[in-house]
Length: 88
Image (cartoon, rainbow, N blue to C red; front, side, top):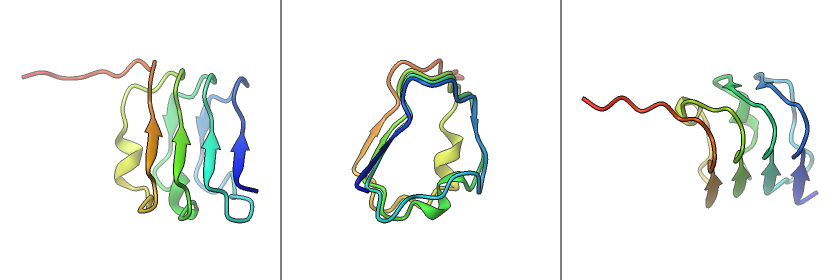
């Protein structure tokens, strides 16, 4: 499969080792869910991922990217989340 689409569901969180990419999946669409938590390491097995759509969820931070091994990622859509930004 080139793209896995799980949009418009009621996914609340992404837990490490709960989802294994199918074949050489290059795209993952998780838009229009209710995702507020992405555990570190969730994306560790998505080495071929090029396009990730997490738009229209309830994410408040993008810290999950720190632990992700997404060297091939070219497109990241985080549009319409509820990010909290501390301005000092």
